[in-house]
Length: 297
Image 1 (cartoon, rainbow, N blue to C red):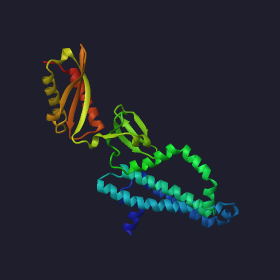
Image 2: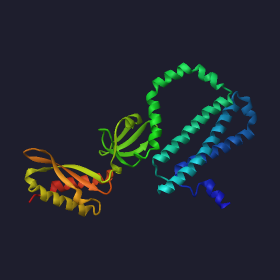
Image 3: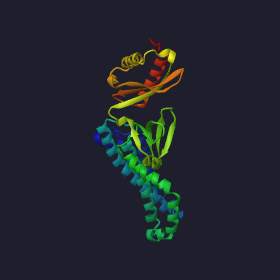
Image 4: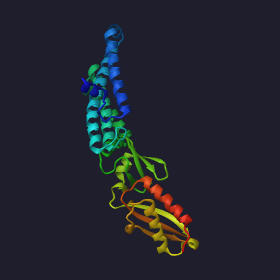
């Protein structure tokens, strides 16, 4: 009995609180419909097509609950294998959620045809030309939809990873939908990139690079600089003390990108054991502060 209660309440499953509420709402709504059917059957029978609509709603809810139960077991096992909390999402969980939603919508359409006794073949024949026109009009949407599925189940770039798409700004993947990949850029902006654009461009995944690198640009006045070698040694020492065990100092370099009579634009290329937007922001702040305060010798 205790085990049954745990299954019903999803106590032992790695399921988010939001998903649990949705699941409980679906079951509650299904029970409410059955109770209404028992006590108000005569009312339903007196309203045209009311019983048909009622049947579609019941079948849809049963389908939704069934696929959600399957989703709970699949996603819960996946989260436990990858040590992901119930409130976190990755490409796989987003993809499974999308399949559940698509299955529910498709099932609803099928039930409408079945319950209202609509001949599918004649219906498709009657809208054939209209369907071709819709396909041409919504071809970009269809491409994004299909590419969205491919991205959701891809391991090439996943939610939380630091990437660059073509020449667009670098950023961290925040979410993947049927229409876009949502990217949080280094400037803090949220960039919505259509899935078809993502698939059409090369994608650099900095989170999968070995070794990983962080590049930071900064400026120094010529009057500050002194010796470049001494500056580089002091900068690397500063980073090693501030972020112990993070950088491979022997693989870090500072080189000149641009030079004017008053100042020099440098680029720090730092090899690190991990790469993330948060770490890059912290390192960028540290390097800029160090450059401002530096007094050459």
